[in-house]
Amino acid sequence: MSETKKAALIPKQYLLTFILTTCCFSLWGFANDFTNPLVKVFEQVFIITTSQASWLQFAFYTGYFCMAIPAVLFIRRFSYKSAIMLGLALYACGALITIPASLTAQFALFCLASYVITYGLAFLETACNPYILAMGPAETATQRLNLAQSFNPIGSLAGMAVASLVLAPSLEVTKVRTQLEAQNPEYIQYLVTGETDLPEGASIEDSGETALLQDGSSVTVYSEGIPDFQAVSGALGGAVPNVMKALRANETKQFNELQQTDLGNVRGPYMVIASVVIVFFLIFAFCKMPSFKQEEQEAPFFQIVGHLLKRARFIEGVFAQLFYVGAQIMCWTFIIHYGMEQVGLSLSEAQNYNIIAMAIFLTSRFICTFLMRYLRPSIMLLIFALGGFGCTLGAIYLEGQSGLVSLVMVSACMSLMFPTIYGIALKGLKLEEAKLGSAFLIMSIVGGAVLTKLQGGLITDYGVRTSFWLPAGCFVMIALYGLRCFLTHDKSYNNEA
Image 1 (cartoon, rainbow, N blue to C red):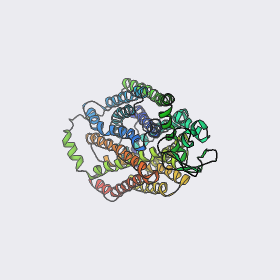
Image 2 (cartoon, rainbow, N blue to C red; image 1 turned 90 degrees about the horizontal axis):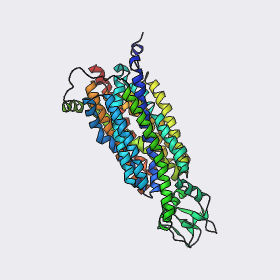
Image 3 (cartoon, rainbow, N blue to C red; image 1 turned 180 degrees about the horizontal axis):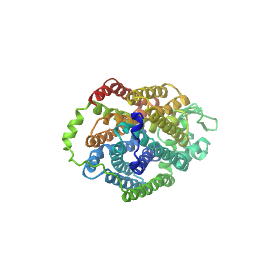
Image 4 (cartoon, helix red, strand yellow; image 1 turned 60 degrees about the horizontal axis):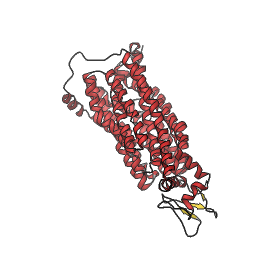
């Protein structure tokens, strides 16, 4: 019998614990990917720029950075199970903050809700990832984590499906867009007629043949003053904020009712997920789980930190994870902007491409988990990072539908990256070191906050296609880490072993 067959992937005594812990991966996947389309939703409902709406993602992913170290200190003091339960409690509390946020129509409160939710997610991820690694032999740890992480996209798909099939069709701003596309005079008047007050930035050229929209694009106008939104890609998306601004200025009551309806639609899914999270909190409370507590006292906190800082494989892994999370969140958040502005899709249609991307991501992750039986994780990371770079270049240089398809295919390349970087960075560490190392890797998720905010600014200033040079650069950095591991770190680990 081969050595690979002797090393069980999931020992029977840990099977129930593995299943329950893996469910948490789906729970935070839902939060991540329901939040992504909200950037575009809030941009429309609150009539703010992409850069301003990106504060939602900044708040969401900054929570990881702030709470990862407190989470690992909590685990050291108590247990993985206790940390998971606290994470679930914070998750539910954050979701419930959307009630006052929606009722008062305060974007800042929605940002606070996202921030508190990720307090909970930081506890969950800091606890669940090393907990999964500990549930069996060290030889199969990276493969086991890849298997658990394969269920994260299931939650992500659920979040995307709710956003696309439930939220987007019910939004009043979606109906405004539909009415514009149908050339409803009630809304067209705010764009091209001289008899009513036009919003700032909208005007009609002297020729009477074109109308200039808020974003600087122009559309053909028929003789009766009706614009042809199909003539210019992205023109319809540029018209929506014009109408919303005009409604806010001239029809205040109608605008307030529209805004309250849409914020109520956003609130609904948060109430459902809060209920689901509370149920899981109760399940964990009543289930007995292994603690993996060491009999000997753990080394002092700063001593472990000092040891981790001496490991190049780990330090480089933290930075690689930062670039990966940034690339992932940028590609999944702004695929909606890409579809709406470059292809002329509606919010729901653009979100459907996000669902396709996630389905590809999920399928690819299961395939990658299988391939790791035969290929070294480091070489797979290198190959897939180069593939991600190539697909991102396609999103930059290919126009329209082709560029969107190329952006969707980035997800196939990203599928193995998070758990693989995680497993490689923690390889060879003792359990007490892996706990703290996990916290630093979770802190690196702040890349999703900083880099997404930067790309939002780039979209506002230079356009959505040009902005994708930022995730392209991230994939280059990840590829370099894979190359370093393949050429140097893997050999040094084998020599130590």
